[in-house]
Structures are given as C-alpha cells and as structure tokens.
Amino acid sequence: MIAGTPKSQALLPIPRRNSALAPVSVVNNIRMDTPLVEPAGMLETITFYMGLALIFTKFAMLQEIQTEVMHFNLYLLYIFGIPAIFGMVMAGGLARTLTSRTTYYWVGFTLWMLICVPFSSWRSASFSLALSFLRTNLVMLFVVAGLVVSWRQCHLVLQSVGVAALCNLASSRIFANPANEGRLNLDFGTVGNSTDFAAHLLLTLPFLLLFVYSAKSLLPRIGALLGVGFGIFTILRTGSRGALVALVVGALFMFLRGRSRERIALVGLVPICLAVGLVFLPSQLVDRLRSFSASSSNVDLGAIESSQSRAYLLRKAVEYTAEFPLFGVGPGQFPSYEGGHSKTMGTHGYWHETHNVWLQASSECGVPGGLLFLAGWVSAFLLVNRTHRKAKSRSDCEDLQATTLCVMLAIICFCTAITFLNFAYLFYGPAIAGLAIALDHAADSEIERRSRIATTAA
Image 1: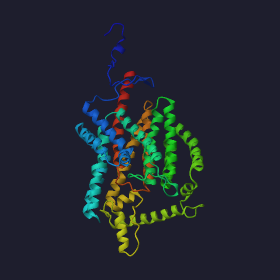
Image 2: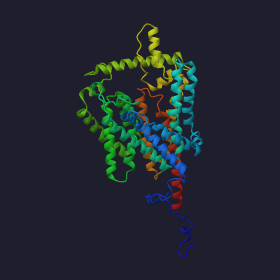
Image 3: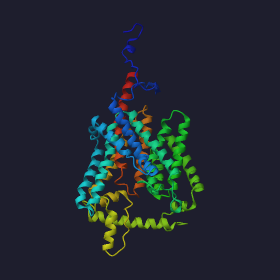
Image 4: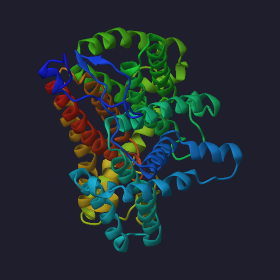
C-alpha cells in the first residue's frame, strides 16, 4: 500500500493508459474512462470497418448511385461484403447471431422461399429471386449482428445509417426527376420510385435524430434537426399517401413513448410542418395527399384510380393466399400469375405487384412464409423494445434509451409505409433484424459495464 493512501482507495482498480480508453467524462458522478471497445486484433478491426462500409453502401444506395454516374458497376457490395463475411465467421459472429430467435425467423423465411420454388408458377424466376435474397440480403443479418461486439461499435453502425440518410437527401436534390403531378423520384435504383424512396427515407431519417441526442455542441444538433425537417418535406414531395400515414403513426408513437421534451417538440413541430407543406408543396401534390376517397373535395383522379387498382390487387392477394395456402403462387410471381390467370379467365389483368408487403409474402410464399416474414419484423421490434425498457429503468443509460427509441421509431414508420408497398425480398428486414440483435447484445454489455463502474464508485 502506498503511504498516505486510504485503504478504501488503495483497493480501487487503477485504470491503465492506452489507446482504447475513452476521453474522461462524468455521467451522474460516475467516471466513464474505462475502455469502450473490447481488445480486438487487426483482423477484427479491419473486417468491422469493412462491414461498416457495406452497411453504409446499402443504406446510402452508393452502388446504385455509382453505377448511374459512371455507367459501369464497381461491385462495391462484393468489395466490402466478402471481407466482412469472412471476418464475421472468423470472429465467431455466426454463433453470436444464432443465439437470437429473430435470426431463425429470417433464416426460416429464406428456406421456405427455396421450398416454394418447385411449386411456383415460374420456377426459374422464383429460384433466381430466392438465391439472390440468400446471397445479398440475408447475409446482412449476419454481418450486422456478427461484427458488432461493443456499444461503441453499435453506435458507429447507427451513425453510419444516419449519415446514409444525409446522402439520401443529397441524392433527392442531385438526381431528382419530377414525375407526373410533380412527384419526386430518382428514376434509378431499386427504390427510385416515389413511394419506394419515401419508405426508404422513413427508415433512415430516425437514425439522423441520434446526432441530436449525442452531439456535444449545439451546431451539430441544429444541423441534424434541419436535416430531419428537410427529410420530412422530401417525403411529402414524393406525394406518397402511405408515407403520410407513416408520418402520422410515427408522430403518435413518439408522443406515446417519448419523454416530455419529445412531446413538447412534437406539439411545436407539427403545425410548422403543416404550414410549410401547404406553402411550398405544389397544389397537385396537396390534392393527391388529401385524396383518400372519391368523396374528397378537389379529388385527384390519378390517386383515386391508383386506390381502386390497389384494392383490386389486395383482393386478388387474399384470394391467392386462400387458394394456395401452403406454397403460394411462387416467390415474386404474383404479377405474372395474376396477369396470366386473368387473361385465361377472359379478363384483362393488371400485371402489378400486390402493393401490400404482408400479403405479398403470404400470396407468393404461402401462409407459412407470410407468418415467418411477419414474425421476423415483430421479433426485431420486440427485441429493441426490451432493450429500451432495460435502459429506461436506469438513470445512467439515457443515451441507450434515446438510441433504442429512434430505432423503434424507424421500424414503426417503415413497417407502416411498406404496408402499401412490395418490399418483401429487399435487404431491409434482415438488416434491421441484425441491428436489433447487435443492439441487444451491445446494450447488455454496456449496462453491465456501467453497473460495475457504479458499484466501484459506490
């Protein structure tokens, strides 16, 4: 024992100076100068940042933008994805991912797609779709959940999606292509369509809110808030009524689950957003957003025709789900089956998707596929909600509470929007499931770490 040092202090561990230490800060009188990242080798570090680049490339639509600008494909997803997958397997991420029930729902959905292929109305097309989902989309679950081992890494992943949201907003200005009725779309990529792009923004924008909570100074917070406001205006510019419904549902969710300051912010921001929308949105877009029925004043005929065709397709999706309850009409084959079947029956088919992601999964992959798809999304939300409740019960985890609230907001808004879209076979479900698993593991480790700090300090 060092002379002059009280015995109680001599028993406390002395933190060592190394590069893994975070800057010294105090949270609720607790020094937070312990390592934020578990010791990792060079391989784990490199593969984590490769995975981070893959996540950013996916959410920022970077490969699609690069192909549009350069007119050739650099295959960025392969450049970042192959090392990330290799590092995830070598670091034991596969075993960590398989500990969650959410993983088994998405793996089960993928396997059921493959099982449905022999019973499909177009086997080769269904097999190609199922194989593509397995190779490029399901892998996102394992990359996100398997590479994240600490809260700091998890926060970097979340921030990368927030930065991707800024890239999405920049894309809406640089590559904007006003469609009919002045609706905003990108005219390229998998989500270039107006309604699809609006749903993509609804998923990424809540991650931009994380900068409002985590920024140290006022300027970045104001910038993030302005970005979110511009994002909401961009969503309205798409003229998507489903996205408008999602915005309303998201606002109600924040009002019910948020803290007092979030509720106060909503009360102040909603009138501002309405006023800005009425002033700056073209009149035809305002009419379209208001046209939910033929009895609406200043009804938009194009919007009403769209609603009628969607109602017909929904009826057909329910009919095919009941007619082929086990294997459906085949993954991705609703448009071709509906068009060909209607022609055989002597009527003119629409040859369109279902415009409802839940019925898309059930009509094309049967009831088991639809239930697995639904369970994958519900399980991911419940996993984040459980983490939110654990963080909410602790006074030293306000950052975790805010983070999980933003992720739940993203899931709620996105799932509401895709209820009117065809997103069953895109990467969003597996990626968000992987993020929920990583958030759960990282938050548990971080809460345990802070508990040890509090106990030591006491």
